[in-house]
Image 1 (cartoon, rainbow, N blue to C red):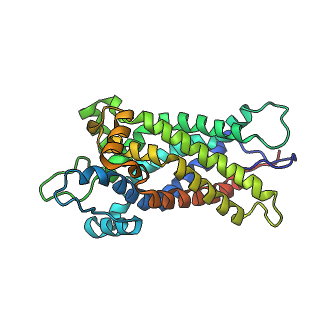
Image 2: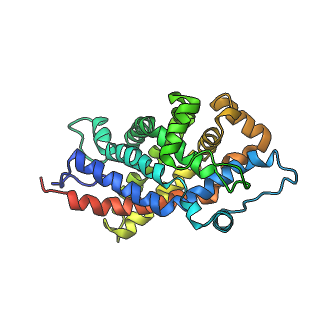
Image 3: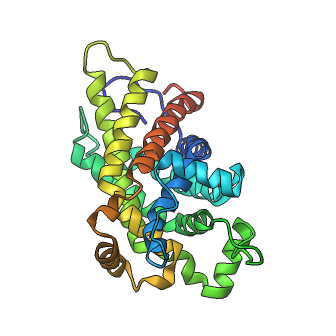
Length: 306
């Protein structure tokens, strides 16, 4: 992604190359950070599990503690549960939402526009590409959450799914094709909002930094912009992220998005919407830094002078 700068002859990159660079960068970031995401999902679902527990003592405590508990009880590989559908998701979702951001942003401004693109246009572009991309990729998100939600089962109790492909087929057989889009409402809301927060804020922060003395288009600027994008995304997207995880983790427990919001608030309180905030920021902050650093470098490989 390139922040708006002074008009000049800029290198061009094809739409196909943009999609490839975006998909690769998103997949690499997913692979590096999915243990944090697994911890986040377990923490978000913990409130529901405590409701039926006898002692009501939380099993998971904090990001590091949750990852340590999962690794100790279920094995280190369990931290990467859901990586296959996670990569499916990033190829589709990451490639589309990031790859289409620049074209859609340019579509929202006139052909004769000169100078910085207004922030509202950047936000609109992020909302648009996020909503479109997750509508296509929502089944992969559902399967990833289902696999991450499974903990260590008692002896003799079979797992619901043996793997990603088995999960897809089992969900279709038992719940119908439509079930693959369970939680689509909060998922679209969550990903449109977070996508706009990530891409628009990265774009805006980078643009601002490049105008300050001592800053240039280098790794330091990319890291700071990525951290800013991750923090803003978590602040605005955490409530819908919690609802999405709970609906996807157990679709039978809620009648719909509003019902999930109400039950979560009623049973667990307002702070439940920020349950897992630290691992969520650890996840999105590190994810954005890795993704944007990788993207900036990979794009250079595809760049051709106009």
